[in-house]
Length: 122
Image (cartoon, rainbow, N blue to C red; front, side, top):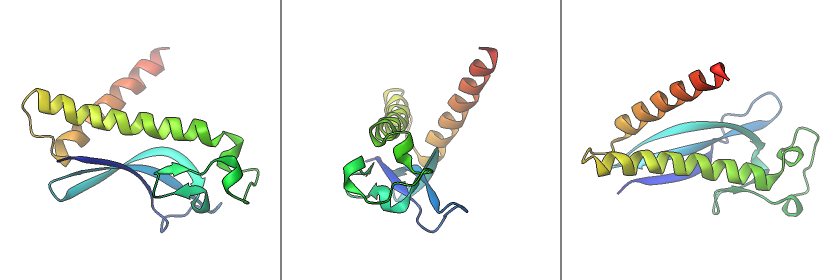
C-alpha cells in the first residue's frame, strides 16, 4: 500500500532559518521525497496534521514568515502536491503497473518537465 505524506526536514535549514516542505511517497518499505519548493519556519509546521499552523497558532510572525503568503494558501498548495503524487500512483495502478518509488518519481519528473515547457510558451 502506498503512502503520501507532507513532511519537513528539520536538519536542512537555510540561512534564514527556514525549511522546505516535502511530499514523501512510500511504497513497499522504500520512500522518496519530492520538494514543494515551499519554505516555512519549522515551528510553523504541525507534523500530526501535515500542515502549516494557522496564523493564530504560533507566536513567530517575522516578515519572512509563511504568514506573508497565508497559511491556508500554503496548506492548499501542499494538498495539491500530495494529490498530484497520489494521482500518479493511482494512474499507474489503473494501467496495471506497480507504482514503485522509482516509477512514480520518473512520471513526476516527466510531468514537471512538461509543465515547465508549457509555462515557457505562455
